[in-house]
Length: 246
Image (tube, rainbow, N blue to C red; front, side, top):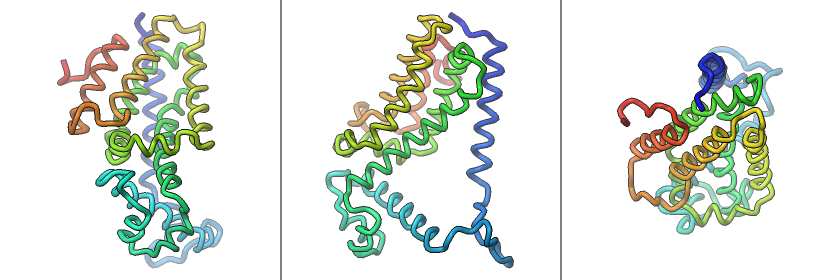
């Protein structure tokens, strides 16, 4: 069943506004960042130690992400991570006691990405509008995945890491939140059943195609893989295939 063009246009406008706002937040200078030649604001600045600790933690995660993608979760030790950082193992332990904890934080970045993609749906007036906006939502998800290739490769290449964090309470909580958000739409009597089934299948196709572990398709460039995933999602949803993929 086709989407109402007026509803879909309204939905896309809201989604575009949300993405633009996200881009402004990403590129804006943080409130507590020093500006050359001017003193920082005491009101906006958090304690320096807290900021330094957060920066160090983020740096650890970025370096661990590089190593997990390069040589794999199982073959990367805490010593490898500390040595690339130029830290002692004791300094690394201060932030992360286990390798599983590091992988979990990286995995939760994917949850955050998906949460940001789904958030604009909350601004739409009803479930029918949300369902009509679904093709745009999945397209945004694929865009974000391409913007974070290391995060995608982390999941493609490290099934052992995913198993290690599978039963973690934080991971399960994030999974439950995601499931509740999608199930509310899939169970809505205001959306035709055929459309709900297509939404569920398209979500599975996008996730399986981009972040399912194991590199089932071999060493395929992410851009190429994403293009084919877009085409598969469009076919499932009954939407036009993207330009260049027809």
